[in-house]
Image 1 (cartoon, rainbow, N blue to C red):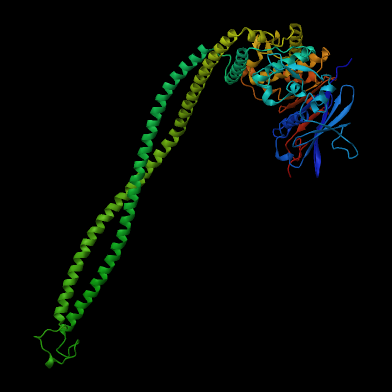
Image 2 (image 1 turned 30 degrees about the vertical axis):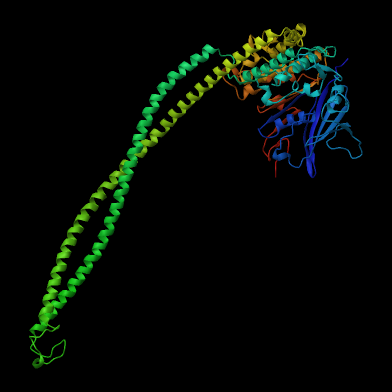
Length: 616
């Protein structure tokens, strides 16, 4: 008997006046690759949205005008159906067959968007019926309280986005402490096919025990939150204290270098400022001298003009005095009427004498002016010699400062990085102290209540045989991918995660975490198929090959291996299950040539632009 499962056949966006924008899929391997910001990751978000997700679709510019989403699916026995939903969210419409748009002559069935045990007509209930998991109950609290299984409980085990695939936590967990019991119960359901319908809720009549349980839940949530903030969980406290000591020594040395460099830089800046002030004052004084010399030249011209006029008066007076007596040239009196003893403004000798005295005065002023001009000229020459030298020194200082600036910047950056690193380690040590304190309090709370201890021991048990088979499935898969050191894979119940070759999956680099998360997810699907256990039947993985694009370091770098080729080659053999791989890294040439590979170029003039056409 074939285990019921689902396959995604088509995702399509439609809108008034818009050509349908979507992508088709087949059973087996499907690959979407190409440039960033072309809608690749948006495809996973849209699939999740169409499987009952309540998170609103991102309002990307290319989606404007598309108001409806269609998701066509196929069951393992060949039935097809299409789900329609408004891009803004809300209820679903269901119709048989594969469609891009809702047929006008069809009467769709309406399905609610939120799971409800009392309402069989929801998207969750419909999908669960299709994979044989309807009416299942799962344990949601340590007190054995149960709830109806929702398809949303399964989604994180088959839809893994780029952020989740590289997280350090277990692939079966979403990061919320309050959901850990439920998540483990869902994992157990897939491994065993057995739900928690027979689990009997534990009665708590003792208010003290209820209080202890609540406190334990709160402490567990705090502990999980604090542990997620630890940047390097593998490093011991002794190693962190050793790092602090080395950083302190480096900081002291860098502080000395930085202080010396800043002092030298400051001296250069002060010297440059002083020279700039001197050059500015010199330039202002030189301009003032130039202006004064120009005015003095104009004054000297006036002096020469006055001397010329006075000289003419003297010559005219001499000539008049040499003439024979006659009518006065000034008043016109005849000689006999002229009185030499009376005062007369026309006394030529007096006028000539006055002109001579004025000329002598002006000559004296001209000599004084010439001395002043000479002094100013010498001062101007000194400034003309000084200012170029000052500018040369300024240029030299500018060059020295330009050389010093990058060095000082590097020293400051290095010092800042060391300070930040030291603060980060200090914060981590403080965080570890808080974790240790919380853990001690938790231990005290557990010891204080035997009932709570019993409840804790009654947590969902995972059968060792199923875990061992699952780990063997993942190990075989990793070996088929030629993953380095893929031997000795087992499931560690304490961390709810895989241990590969003696190293916890979550302690590896983000690239290794991504590929091993993919192995966990794909291995779970294969395990369920081989053991005839229910599973949605498909996985959608975003950036599982991160180690080929953004490795954390040498131990996280798979670029020198053939893991990528073997990864795709392995998935091409699938016929009764489905994998949709979203990647930035180009797959091998034989994968790219297949009809189930979709390349998004982000080039409006070359091949397909993206999920949506480019904005015109």
